[in-house]
Image (cartoon, rainbow, N blue to C red; front, side, top):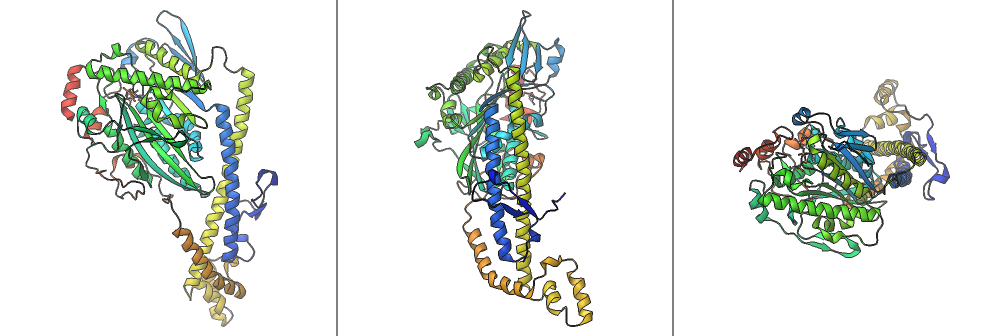
Length: 577
Ligand SMILES: Nc1ncnc2c1ncn2[C@@H]1O[C@H](COP(=O)(O)OP(=O)(O)OP(=O)(O)O)[C@@H](O)[C@H]1O
């Protein structure tokens, strides 16, 4: 319900000096509703918006700091048909604890910041990721990793399915949505996708999909990492494509996914043989300016090589993956322990992420485990990795009392964020309303015999016309009917106003974020996009929809965790190539 009071009184201690103390909750209540008064009100509202946004950012950052800038979640994969045949799962879970029963009957406990059970949905997971996306928009670097044994659902969590999208597509939607809501700043996004395969970097947005893994490798690989000033990292020659809308971002993401190397082992029929990194660079201007990076990383499977039956090239791929995962674990745990030396240079993966993992950055690692008894060994390995990354010494978890206090504080801050967001929305509505009123006023002035002017100019002449005039203006609120003097002021302001508009649009340097960007996932994944990219950084080309879906379909259509034999594997390969 609308606030009945025409003004909002703002407590002064919550605002910086430049923010006015009184603004209208309903701009149409402004005395003398002229274009210049409305414009002045918009400026006031924008100041308030900026101030509220600052408060929201500060509260969010406090929440993330309390929760910890490096967090580890654990997700248990839902059971597959093969799992069900085995006896009871060795895993039991609580909200922040997993207990694994070993084959010898011993019980091992592992902590996590949050545990997602087999029944957890993609939505449940995304709800925990969403706050750090806001933090990325606020200017912090963010890395989200999916870690785990092969076949435990890393790709499912990051990519998801068309009808059940994962973190990456949801994040893309969320970023565009939030950016379109935030009128206090303007955002532009660009996107890159790369793969680290056997220690070499490949640009997934330049690769052609329809070649085999071996051809792909020779096609484009070995990009170099350059470190610039302020520890910033550049990957030489990596495409960074400006994305102006969700459709374009999805189209690029789909292209990158298809180019990713997949092979088949006898554990997972669409096993990822590499680390796949999706980077969204966020440039924010106006208000709180800056550039930040959001990395979403689907790590290669942390497999025990003997179990996968890997040989030859697949064995080498597995070794490369394991080495870099170990380097990542070392880096994150050193950061968590606040060591002086952080061993970024031990792998390409950690080198690339070195400017996004340190101070001020937020890291989220989702460790995936299998519910199956057959995988108990791997599960313990993955949870040991999680423990190392969390770097919390044995028995040094917070006491129950401290945990309660922490949760209370987080709840208070969450409430503050929610309240501020409600206020922000009210301010946004008023800005929109004021802009709409200005537009209406300009239109009225633009047409010399508009109903409003007829009503004002001719109403007193003849009784019959007076009546018809009343009919004409009955749909227009009385306060909108200009007086003679306000008409004169309007006409004097008109020239100034149109100049302001021209200047505003003329100097706009960023891609406009339009609000009609919420699309259904199935649309955006499956349907080729009709509009062309208006990329500013790099012109996106070669996104032809004809680059076939067939390979992906064949790979993912098989049953989850189906253990395929080598013969089947060859047949599938020949189907595809
Ligand atoms: N939570 C889940 N709900 C439903 N299906 C799931 C879930 N997790 C995983 N799956 C299914 O299990 C199979 C293996 O998952 P996925 O390919 O995501 O594993 P992965 O860890 O990425 O494996 P790899 O490291 O080999 O690439 C897929 O068919 C996936 O759809």
